[in-house]
Image (cartoon, rainbow, N blue to C red; front, side, top):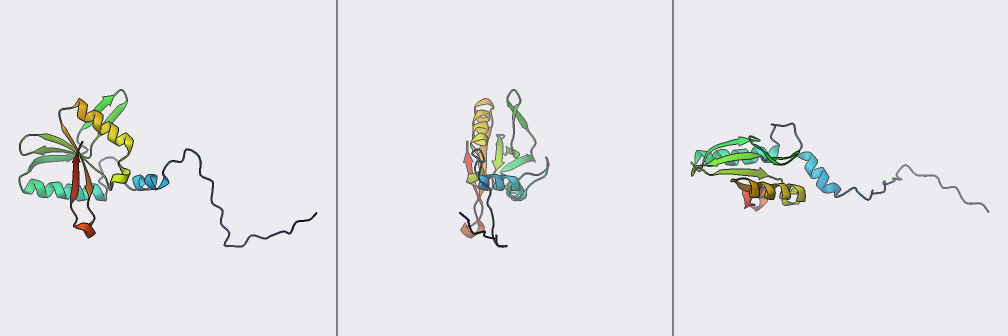
Length: 142
């Protein structure tokens, strides 16, 4: 018995099979966009820094610092929030900004909750509102 031989065309593409532990690839791509060297702000962090600067000018904030405080949560487990923010009433807040809610991973949420239970600071997460919807920030307290 013979089988016809079919030549592959130039347009043929082969997609690799997904591995069982590959996870959410879209989420990994979004996270990879924000990975810069320590101390360097990505676009979302820079936009939030400008937001904080405006609040400082308005007198709501006395001081802020990018990646200024590293908190120990357990042995070999730390949390470095994006911004430590000293409010005008003397309250020290820890602000983390994310590009969208989809990239606020369970791991990051757990770390923030553990830190909120362990330290006397207010922990907040900020998400940008698209310019098409008016811009600004959604800030949620942990």
